[in-house]
Image 1 (tube, rainbow, N blue to C red):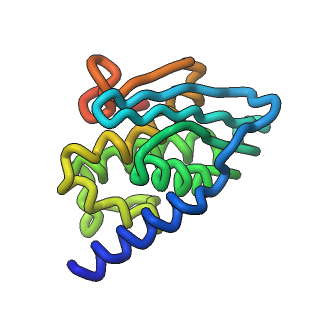
Image 2: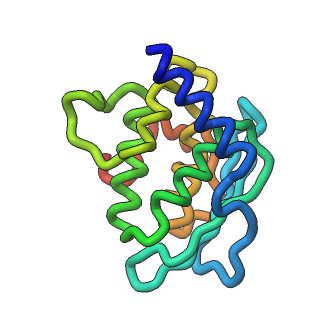
Length: 162
């Protein structure tokens, strides 16, 4: 358990200091803006679809370390994936973060993203970790903005056909 927490902290710090795919994406075909009023996170996700595949992706904004690290790992993971595979990862990440996905007994495609599994034990940080994924879902579905509150709450609102 201590090793898992140490790895979680190491990954968060690394991706917070050196976020992958941070910045703007020229001529993005899809984009969305996400807000987490509880923490103050505000991010933008932009991507280019080449047919049905994510050809390029970037994020920017002001957010806490957990949100930034989640966005960094998300962009690195979904780049090159199909829209369908990205939506699967979105659902699985959300379910993992809220404790609905048992990583030991249920099949999943999360790989290294499982380092965020411990966030379910930090209820005030769950929405920080989910916000980039929720914003990616909005971008993929041409929804300009989204939030982690009210009817847009990713902890309660279904994403995709979940």
